[in-house]
Amino acid sequence: MRPFAIIAGLTLLAIAAGCANTRWGFLNRERDRPMTGPPPAKEDVVAYLNNNAGRIQSFRSDDLQITVHAGAIPVGLSGKLMTQKPLHFRMSGDALGNRVVDLGSNDQEFWWWISKDDPPDQYYCSYKDMQDGRLRSLPFPFQPQWIMETLGLGPYGPAEKYEMDHDEYHLRLVERGRSPQGRMVRKVIVMKRTPQKAPNPQVVQYLLLDDATGQELCSAHISRAQQLAGGALLPQRMELRWPAAKARLDMTFNGAAINTSLPQTAFLRNPMPGVRSRDLAQIFDSAPLLRTQGTLNP
Image (cartoon, rainbow, N blue to C red; front, side, top):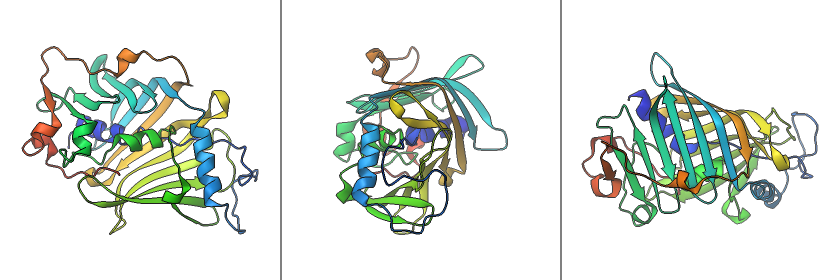
């Protein structure tokens, strides 16, 4: 796969991130160390995530650094990211001063454009068509709702939809569901049991697995966090993995801020001069870019 095509899949997966704070009683240790006592109640863990997500209405990074590993030579991009509840996001990426990636979503639809794609069309799909089952496959495991969860905007509850397990170091919230294509999948949120402060992340992994085999479809791994206004602990460095494409995307969120005023025009899909717009719900049966099997997260 071309590196620029990998960018769309990985960034749409999750531009992912964890968010947390340290006010909850079940995270009452000062260091990351093994814990042998009983785990906290599942309801408390989910309430903790929802409480932190409730502090965040929007997130932006004005200095987004991206390195794509999908071959012998890494590809570096610089860009910007804006996202706002419930389904608004926009990300752009530049190389050598030229725009090469544009990704977006609003309440009605999502889209992407990659300058190095062949052909370099702008692809889009409405959420209604996706929910109605008209979008049977994508070139990457992707669903917009998961993006918002991995960005820390949630919501994560209710607790009843999760199973929880643990070891000495981690808590794992597991949710099972079915993709729009009928495939059973498993979402896993992995958190450290001991409280963390920036630059250490509290939520360290978001995993999307094939439920039958346990095979990893995609994942986000947070290695460095930053504390922003209101006590929210959000990602600064993270790695997105797409095993089927043998690809990895390293992202660093600099110039980050939450709950700022965002221009609503940023979340509109606009025609691009000389670029054809194509509806995925109309072309999924025959478009070459959809030949790679994908899975949508429930």
